[in-house]
Length: 158
Ligand code: FES
Ligand code: FES
Image 1 (cartoon, protein in one colour):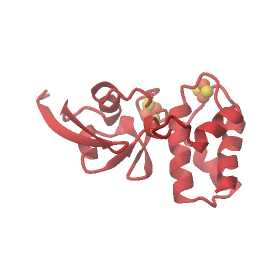
Image 2 (tube, helix red, strand yellow):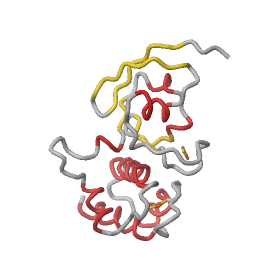
Image 3 (cartoon, protein in one colour):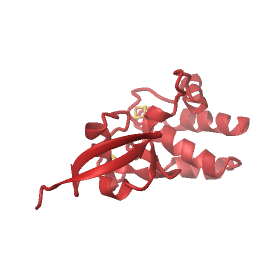
């Protein structure tokens, strides 16, 4: 397989990153290793766990299933972009903390980005739909209920 490096410009959290990657390099690896944005986690690396969830043009996607070269024309958002420039936490981050919606925290960046995408798209999502939408990501620690409560609390403030 060719290991030719391709020049690529990615827009992540409003900033431009110029990287050189092989065509087969995943977006998740590129974000973590080329851009230094290690908040995006890798669990299964096969599209099952959702730990690598980011927003691409506002839609939650699994970055382990995408090639970086597919993302060149998109606006990418990762967990590093959630907090404000002054370090103030996003309301989802505050809610996860307040509702104890994390233990080891491995799944948390993926859940935060998934929740952000869900609420941006459907701020009036009902409880059943929210539960169903959040079920696409896996958490081994919390039992999910606190995650659901955290996201629900933010929805209720919108
Ligand atoms: Fe991407 Fe699990 S690491 S879905
Ligand atoms: Fe540990 Fe979710 S908090 S996997």
